[in-house]
Length: 124
Length: 380
Image (cartoon, rainbow over the protein chains, first blue to last red):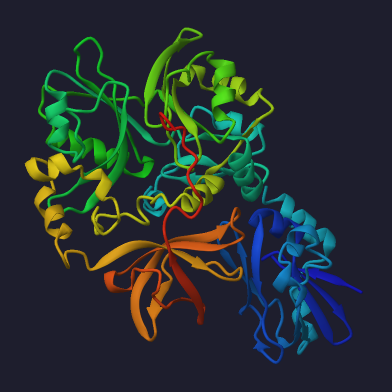
């Protein structure tokens, strides 16, 4: 299962026609202690680059953008009671939402694991 | 402290402990014209450590001013509403710089540091406002009153229930007769150190003025105690919010006045009658019935979604106020906020909601502070 990354520090797992989206370990470490996550409702149509979710840390609210276009199929309900999952398991249990992939061509501009690592190293 | 955005044009300057912060794992951000540590291991961890042990904060961005000369007491009383003529040497007061209409130009701490009949006061003003304050004070103080900006001194804040025990380890005996809102001075390693038992967290604690040459040595000496961890601006903000303490540039601005802001205690009774300071008349009018359209209140929210600065407060469909600072309270486990709300809704029975991204969150007016203060008061 390929994993893609965006410059906004989201990760995208694509399995068939469904994508799972979350924020990276780098992103959660930058945000700090997360106290609330607002995930999109299923059925929401998202356009690539549009605001899809909001993550609130102790410091501030930050938007999470849709890395590709599609329709939301599920938000991670576990984050309602346990937003700290984004800190403790950002790239696994702390996923944000799942969506259909409307155009696989949109994945082509995204980074793979190696490219994302290099990208983050350039930021520090 | 004022909104740092207006300083973004200038590259931020470095403070005496800049490298020390980086060596201790700080994440640095531009704030009030300086590079400042926002956090080390994490805001919540530093917040909780300060509430249970002792956090060490660098607040060297703040303006430290010494005002002295014959007649300094009377000269300062013309610009501050505090009663300085009855403030004994070694005592600290919270005070305000006001404009003619009673708007708050800055809030500050003033210590009477007079010795041997020489009148002298030590002021700590907000970092983002200090250049404006200096210009304003210079304009309003007589020419024969000296103002010295201690820009070669760092300011450290050691805050938390273990702060006094820690400070005793470095300066033995220094807290023997030093209580909340009292200051003292001592010599350490060849440098003069000023210590005030005050702070911005609601905990017992100290603010320590130290020459830049000795700042690292003092920070190391304090941090050598296992009860101390460094804490950044992030925890300082969440701690002061829980303590119900207003932040200049957010909860207080030139458009807010001390009466609406609930800072009537900074306008002592004796001087309400005698006046003689900038903004006096405008403040007195606000003490009258209906003199304040709005009041600063504390709001407690349910759930976990914080309401931040700028969020609107509603009573039914009516817009009745604005959040001036808000966030998640690590101590209480729910979001809290300070807001200016129309006076008729500023009570605990008011049915208020705060709008956050289209949602209406129920909010209850609660008395400040949100988390009880833990000051070492004399006689307590």
